[in-house]
Image (cartoon, rainbow, N blue to C red; front, top):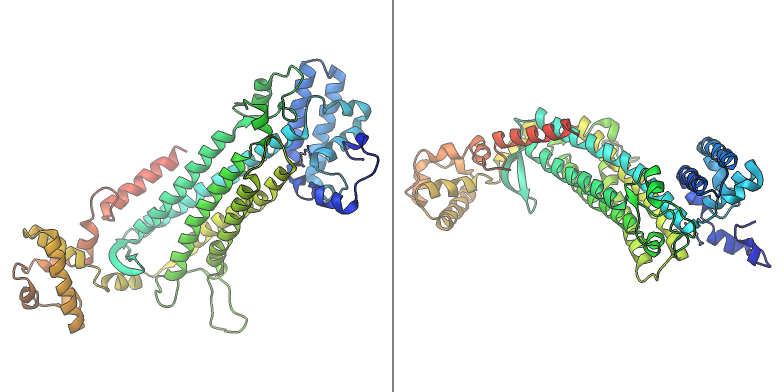
Length: 459
Ligand code: ARG
């Protein structure tokens, strides 16, 4: 029988029951529901609602149910109870008899589900944080290993300026670092416990909500009972953290898919993270990266779905809020798997530094250097830019690179150019001239790596 059966003459229509029940997905909250129930039993004991013996019997049974729940997920999810809260209350009563019926005193499933879900979010975020940290380390490792490797830097997917491959690695390190900080920040904001808010108006029992919150590992209790039972900001925030991080991972995936292409040939993905074609025997496809890119859409979908559900929802609890879970239950494992797959690709890829350097040297990517050279000769940058544009036009016509032009050809366009121009055309000069903070000069990249290592050391 449903928890609320007393008021009803008829049993629920079967189709409605199936539509209304949430056990099929909220069984995932079993452990959190049992944990919050144990804490609630403690709070009821403190105010004398549960006698010493009753409290101990209830807590013992709930602790046993934690073990049972961990071993029997499938059995629970196909039970006919409405949701995880009803299921656990029913199992408790089966185990301890009538005293089990006292546990729901002063509590509602509305504050209960909000508490359970927050506990789940905090726990699930820990695995995400750990894997983000690992991925950061993987980027730093590769950056250190490939410090001498040059790659073309692109804008508009046109070769723009040569950069160190390590600089590229550290760019993703920065993104993933922000993802980590953002998630930590979101967790701080959600870390307030709604338990003891009742259905919406607060509980009628003198519960010490602060102490209850601390018992459950929260940093404090929520302030307003209406807000407590209807707030799902934290789910939107977590989905937004996931979405933004997936944006980063999808950009990473896209870069590597291009670097791995036959046309670029900058890297080779490991066989163990690639797959083949059923028809074309020569194919080795970057499926892991394509799936990271593809799964990004699905994570965005969860965020948009929940925001749409919450829009215009009146206070306080409405059953619409039951729709808050499945999106996150899907998005978090998807995010976690994508981070791990990104780590795997980074750890196992092979770098083709010859091909990278060859590409970096083409495409007139040292043209900016000549404009900067002219600035040193006293020519305003805008004029220098124009002169180099003409040089590139000339070189293109001759089918030569800038460094292939002889000094007379340089002088025919600008006679201030001297023999020393050739020094600034080398790839090393292009890279090491970018020595202001955050640039691709070797010293700067080494500094970035050092800073990153220092941070990860103190984490
Ligand atoms: N299964 C519900 C949910 O996930 C629990 C709360 C139900 N509360 C209610 N008054 N019907 O949101």
